[in-house]
Image 1 (cartoon, one colour):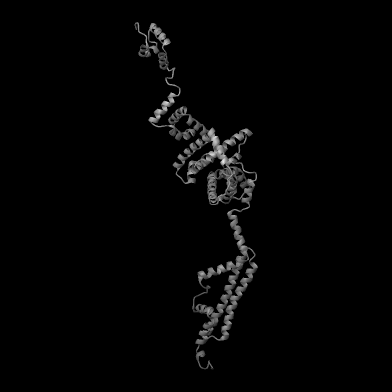
Image 2 (cartoon, rainbow over the protein chains, first blue to last red; image 1 turned 45 degrees about the horizontal axis):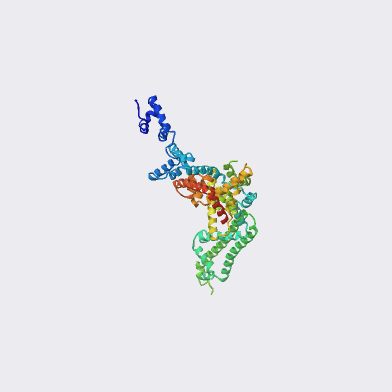
Length: 297
Length: 196
């Protein structure tokens, strides 16, 4: 390089050579002399050597913001959608790097991140509240005093069974069930005697009159049948009164005894009734009964 | 004794096991009730009712891992009932939420404890400013430590909704806390406290 005219244009045109030192010592001396006098070229060299920021301190963020506003829009919203995942270490590595780069330059998101980090530690400590000293005791008093559902159910049944009225209620329900399902007292066979029995129980006088029963016989049969039922009721009542306050097994045993006795007594009355009716019918149908000798009147 | 064995013994009617369970979980259930109702007296009654429900229905709780979700479900249902009753028959004069200072802070100096409590009060105020659903998600996930699946099951909303709402709720809470921490926020907080 021969003799040159040193000015700002030369510095701009040969900037790379100057920075690389690829110029003659004489020219380098001229460059240094020029730089000593020219502030503009000094700044240019400084910027080229990355020693100087070409922009004022607050110019770069403003520029970035302006560019973002005119292109993709503000990125803080996008960053905030990823902050929680980033703190929980659920974010992909590349996304994390980009978010970290954003946080380096965004004070607002940095503050938010710091608060989120603090909340992550603070919130779990808010799960508990110190109770009053007597809280546990009041809970125990309110709960242990109660029984579990099973125990309460058992006790309820025991109380129910031990009531004096239970025997009466059980007998009533038992009777309803028996008559509801069976309709009538189970007699051995459904014969004419059974229908006679039903008629007798409803309209004894009409029945006996229809079969031309004598008044005395009627009274005997009625009293026999009624005494059977009355006896059964008496037995049942006295047993019920005696056994009502005892245990459930006692009540069951008593009920079984009562029904056996009642049915036996009733069956005995029915049996007698059948027997008498059969004798009477046989007597009525016999030739002697129909003959004039047999009937003096 | 681990929770599973404790529950087994409670189911068998062991009253000492029941007492141990109450003592072990009273602070947590009281905290849960407090977060739902925001009033210490009501929270105390609610927590007691929760324990009574637990005692009566402990046979329904299958497994230790299901215990807290089950308890939270009970507390949530009871608190909803209570809020409905309260709405139907409002009582004048709510107690301010400053009672949050009763939160435990073991192993701290009095000054550090005071600072921690004041911060918790501030967080609690910030929580009160959230929407109901966001507050509940913060309560269930961040405070009570439920999984997203458990929250979705409890609140009967899709899992994806819970996920997105959980992150949004955290951001929203952090913004509220930042706002309350700022000088403007302090003034606002004081005015808010006076108004309450």
